[in-house]
Every structure is written in structure tokens, then in C-alpha cells.
Length: 577
Image 1: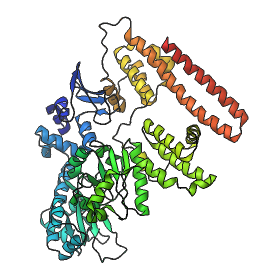
Image 2: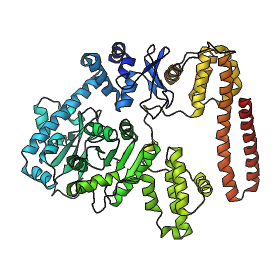
Image 3: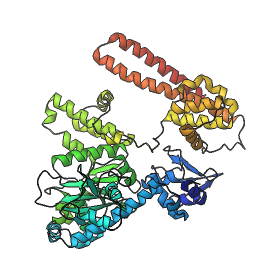
Image 4: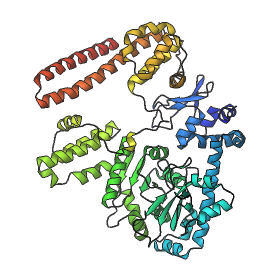
């Protein structure tokens, strides 16, 4: 038996999940508030029988591994280690060579961390540099700061002498092999900041070059991507700052390790930093489990402003409340923390909402004096407003923008509809992890409910035939498998397992065929949503035709729009009666 299957047999999903969320009985299943999105009405369902879970609010679902991976932002092998330990299973005997390799990589990184710490103690120049940056010994020790000595292979030799294979040291990212076959330390003459995963295990390093090195040498050097380290998933210091962030219900994001350490040293504990990368979806997923309030404390130079704009956009799109810190006369948070800690704490409290920051940044009086300048900056701000995930926020900031630029909200709405989606090269937040099941659109939710009814009442399948064209994507494949009495496999089977968690009917006090009645309503809703998509497309095409003076096209599109609207009204009228 595979270790993962043995773990599932030994760990009860309901009992495991009770360690994370409150669950209450709901018939044969259990119900609770979903930890993956904000909700007041429980939509998170757990099946003890099937040992799977599903949230009907955000569409997430899976088994015990999927929950832990999603909740703790883990890869499968990390979840396997955690659950195996909880189940009392020794996975070393039953795991593959790859999984054993993960254990080795953790050990090598931890040993390297100890070596770097010892080297720091013996390097006067490195200690003096840290003192010049006002970092004290207590903070350096708490975050296990070290030093990679100059020379070519001092750390590599020590690791090999401690019994690690050279190929494993290379795989851990601590050693590089030259074209001539020589093995060299990746990090040389650098202050070393160990990067811990969210469980406190060292998974990689960031090295800051010592003063006096050649200008062409990179100031910061990170470990490469390895099986245990992905810089786009790990937030520096988060394993330590999770509790303070949860208590404060606010996270302060800084650009680098020294900023983080100086703020921590200045008793600002609800702080995090990225490790040589811009903020990503994975970072926000981790952070979102403890707070959705994010304060940006970036350098006040141009790169810092650009980085702040990117974080505002990705945070707003994921329903974070993003604020921007005004550092005043200080060039970075570390300087402010060192020279005036009280100013920094006050600035954090008074941080501006991100959209207010955008208004101040883009809507400058001199730019608004010309029509061309006004159009350009208003469109830029409208893109930012449209990016917000909250409809309430969009309405609020659109009204505020209308007031600031003296343009009616209706005109701003029309301008927004003409804007295409903002695209940027390297747009990380537009890319979705392959492991994550995206939030379901309404047509997909309707399709799932229809399939749930058919799974209990195959005799109702004939009523769906004339609505087949409206069933989206893989749900049509599942429906046709039902009709043709075929076995499901792969993603279709996984989705159907999750659909099975829909609550059953209580027909004790109901009259008539409840399932048939709901199916008829759902089919009308499915067609309505299909028509609504067509209507929105026609709306955009009408605006374009009107602006370009294409009268024949405009007339045709208006007729199609009217026909579509009339059909939607008929569906609504039928539902009301």
C-alpha cells in the first residue's frame, strides 16, 4: 500500500479538520465556515463516508492532502511528511527515492545554516558590517544569520566531510559545478540569511555581498529553485511573524531581509518580506489565512514605487485591503526603524488606502489641465478601480474619482467598459497554479447542481437534452457520460465526487416532484446565464460600432441586443410565475 493511502486509512478527515475549523453535524455530513474565503454562512461540507471535503462558496475541494497543501501552502511531499508524522507512519521505508531526496535536502540546508553561523562568529569583518547596519546579536541569532567565507569551496568541503554526497550538495543549491568539472561554493563572502518555510525548516538562503566587492557582482544572491525551495511560495520571516500578524490583523510588507530584521528589532513584529521576487499569488494565499490587510513599506525610489503598484494590483484583485506607508524623509523602512521607531509605528497606523494613493499619484493638478493628460491618467486610475475584486469598493472609488475629476459616474462607467484587460509582461498574478481549482462561475455552479440532481434521478436526463449547448466545459462531458452510462475517470470523476457532497433534499413535508421542479428552474437559469454572456458581448460591440460610426453594424447589434434582452425577460417572468 502507498504511504498516502495508509495515511488516509489511519487519519480521520473530520477529526483532522476539527483542528483547523469548527465543524457541526449536517445530516450524514459535517458543515463549517470555509477557511479559504470570507463567509458568514457555512458552505464547507465534509463527507466522513467518502473522506473528502468541498466548499460550495469558492469551489475548493479534495482529500486530507489537498486540504493541508491548500491551507499551509505546501507541496505534496511536504504534506506527506506532516501527515505521516501525525499518523505515526515511518515513510522512510515506503517512500520513493525522490521523497528520500527531500529529507536529504532539508538536512543539508540545516547543516549549511549551522556552518554559516559558525563562520560568522569567526569573521570580524562580517560582524563589524552587521554592527554598522545596527543589527544586534540577539536579532541575528534569532533569525540564524550567518556568513559565507571568501575562497572557493570551504563550505562544500565541510558538507562533503560530514558525509553528504556531492551531487546532493549541488542539488541543494549550495554548490555549483564549473564547465571544467570543479565544484565551487555558490555563496562566497556574503552575509547569509536562511530562508525558512512556514514550518520553520531551512529550505534555502539569500546572501548579501560584503562591502568592497566588485560592482558587477550581484548585491543579493538567492538559492536556486530546488525540490524544497520556490522563492515564489515562501515569505521571509513568516514562520516567526504569523502569530503577531494574526494578532494585529495587519501585515507589513518590506522588500528585503535587512528591512525585515530592523523592523523586528524595533518591535514591529507583524512584518514579512519577499525573497528576491515580487509578491505572488502563492504568497497571498499563505498570508490570507491570517489577515487580508496588507501595508506596503517599500523604498521611496522609482523601483520601490513600481513594486508597490504591482503589489497593490495583485492584492486588490484578491480582495486584500492594501495600504501604502509614507516614509517621509526616510529612504527605507530600516532607516526609519533605526532612527525614529515611533514615527514608523505612527506611519503604519496612518497608512493610506491604496486607491487613495493612486489618486494622489496620478491625478496631479498639472496633468489634469489638458484633455489628453486628463484622459490618460483617468484611464489609468479606472484600470486600477476595475481590477478590484469587491463590487462595493469599485462603486465607492468610482464615486470618489467622479468627485475628484468632476466627471459624472455614468461617463466614467462608459469609459471603463471601453478599456481592455490590463496586461503586463511577467504578470504573475494572472497565472494560476495547476494545483488550484479556480473559483467557479455561475454557469458552472448551476451545471453542478443539475448533475447532482441527475445523479439521484437518471430519469430526468431527457429534460436536459435541449439545453445541452449551455452546459459549460467538462460538465457537458460528465452529462454525456450519464446519458450514455459510461464510467467517469480523471478530472471528471474527481469533480463528480465533489458534486456528491451537495446537501440532500428533505422531502418529508414537500408536495410534488421537488427534484424535477428544481431542475426546470436550473435549466432556465442556465439559459439565462448563457444569454447574459451574449448580452454583455453585444453591449461592448454596440459601443464600438457607435464610436466608429458603423451604422449598419450598429443597427444589427441593437436588434440582437433587444432580442436577447426580451428572451431573458421571458425567462425571468416564467420563473416569477
